Structure formats: C-alpha cells, structure tokens
Image (tube, rainbow, N blue to C red):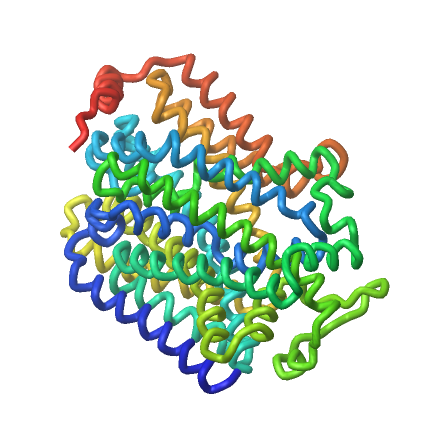
Length: 506
C-alpha cells in the first residue's frame, strides 16, 4: 500500500473515533445509548439502516458472486430490495408508534414484553438469548472480513489485522453507543454509495463504453448475461426469500424505533430505498464488468498488490472472486482515491459489526441485567453495563474469528434466517393483529428459530434444498396464529393496540 493510500485510510479511522468521542458527550442514559433518545432524522436513520444491513456483502460478496457466476447470482439482490421496501412501507411507521405506546420500549425484547404485558419476563429473556446467540457469531464473521482487508492492505499478519480492525470498531461503539453507531453508519453509508457508483462508471469508461463492456462479457462467457442460466426454481425462490429476513432483523428494526417522529418514515424510505437500489446496481455491475476488465486490460500492476490470477477454461479469473472490488480500487484510481475506496470496504464491514455489538449489549443491559438482576439499576449504571457488554461480546467474537479459515462465515445465513424466522412473523403479527397472544408469540418465535437450525443442519438436498428461512418463516407464522386462536389477549393489551391505531402524530 502506498503512503498516500495509507494516510487516507488512517484519516478515515481517526474520523470514526472522533465521532465516537462527540457522541459520548451526548449519551447520558440507557435510552440515549441504545436508541439515541429517539432523535434520528430521516437521512441518518435511512443510511444507518442501509449501511448496518449490507455489510461487506455489498462490496465484497455480491460483486464476487456476480463476477464468478454472472447475473444468475443477482436474484438475492432482487429479493433484498423487495423485502427492504416492504419493511419500510408497512413495518417502520407502525413499529415506531407501537414501541412508544408500549411503555416507550427501547429494544426488541423490551417491546415484546411490553406489547404482551408479559410479567413472567419469558418473552424478553428468550428473545434476548436468540439475539445474543446469533449476533455473537454474526459479529465474528464481520471481524474475519475486516481482518482479511487489513491483512491484504497493510501486509499485517492475520492476527494483528484482526485486532486492529476490532479495536477501532469497539472503541467508538463503546464510547458513543447508538448515536456514534448511527452517525458513523451515515458517513459509512455515503462512502459505500459513492464507491459503488464510481467504480463501475470508471470501469465502463476504461472498457470503451457500456456496449463495448457488455459485448466483451458476452464474448468471454455469454451465460454471464443471463439471469436464469443454470438456476432452478428452488434456487430462485431461496434467493428471493432473503427479503423475508428484513422483518426480523433487530439491528434494522431499531432504526425505525429511533426515528424522531413517525412522520419521518416516508422521507427515510425514499432515501433508504434509493441508496439501496443504486448500491445494488453498482455492486452487480462491478462484478459483471470485472470479467471483461480482467480479460481485456493490462494487469501488470496486479503483481504489486498480491492478487493472484488463475486460468479457468481459457478465461482469466481472480483466485479469490471476492477481491474484485478491491482489485478495481487499486487498478483504476490514484493512491488517495484508492485509500478512500478501501475505507469504503472497511465502512461496510464496520457499520454492521457496530450495530450488532450495540443490539447485543442492549440485550444484556436492558433485557438481562435490569430485568432479572438489578431492577432498580441507575441509568448511568446501565450505560456502563452496556459498554462493558460491547467489549465482552466483541472479545468472544474475536476469539471465534481467530482462525482465518474458520467456517463461522457460513453462519451469516444462519443468523439472517434465524432472525427472520424467529422475529419476522412475530413483529408483523404483533403490529397488525390484535388477536395475537403471549403464548402464540412465544411458540412462534421458538418454532421459527428451531426450524431454521434443523432444516439447515439435517434436511439437505432434494425438495429440502431450500433456504431455511422459507420453512422457518411459514411454520412460525402458522404456529403463532394457531396458538393465539386458542386464547384471548388481556383487555389492557387490546386497549394499547387501539391506542396505537389512534396515535396522534407529533
């Protein structure tokens, strides 16, 4: 890495830490720390939700998949775009209102307990356990990705790179909590967006224009331009089903809860969906154009970056397809811009890790420590419990990520499916059906989570070769409805539901 690139990268990291210090001065109670005091504007909420959602997948995973397999890998992007829009359209406003009506709930487990007036705390404890379990592994996968970026960019050992990336992310999350995470995600979201728009535009120009670029891809491998080539119905359904996961992702739902007013949802939806759709297009085109660029342009500089090229049936390919965005950033731009683009990749990774750490720490502070052990804990005490939880959970995640060949990255799909099946149907039904009961909510959540694990681990191949989120979501919905029909919600729960229906905008 050149000196200008290194300096640009370091300036970015220092900027993230300064944001953490600024947010520290505005964080005085637990609501501030885990929800920002419900004062996020639509722009910050939208980009924060998008950045925390997409992670390194948008700059590494999706471009790499399209680069290796063509447009047939773009179906996940289609499913995610549809799911994100429906989440903003139907869930965001109602969840923002209901979490305020339900005793000003500040976490998802807090909302579930207050929504059903569950004095046994069982909903809170089990939902918090699900969050902690999945997010610890989810976070470790992000740290593996961050470590590999630092490893490749700075020539560090894997272990050193892991600690460098983790320390920066942990620091600003530890200090500033939700405000630091949201503000840094806002900056990171802008960086990601600019990177995803700039790289394919410059690549198209270098390749002689759009027609010349797509013609080059078609000559190298015509199947790359076909979305249905070699893709079966189950594979398409599985890819589109990723969109169902949005309804149950705690780190995304909490952005809806943090909006300063339900009135801001419409503007936030426009900003968030515009960012996401254009970002997805940029990621897909980066991967698609990569095939043409690697096979038609001078690759001499690649040797300086340690990027390996292999020959597959007469076609030149990167040995690691997920490095296509990194390769473009180093080939197409001067060192300063390259540093900014590498910072964008790190942004994508950090913006998800920090959100996962914060949701996990709030589950420990609010949903375990306060609810079970210290009901009279002061706000300052809870904030520090949350901060200590961030450090503790991150340490476990770092240990899990210690092996660069760890299979923990495979658990990302587990986490997305697990949250989507356990919380997705429950969140939707709790917001729009007054007949749902505490027992129905509990049964559906447990069945959804268990179905995901059983389906993924024991039912593979044939008709069972379907993304585990699909059966998990369906069974969770059915069980929630059937169990709820066997009971009746308390009158105070029904009155609260009507209060949410009649909520007056502020």
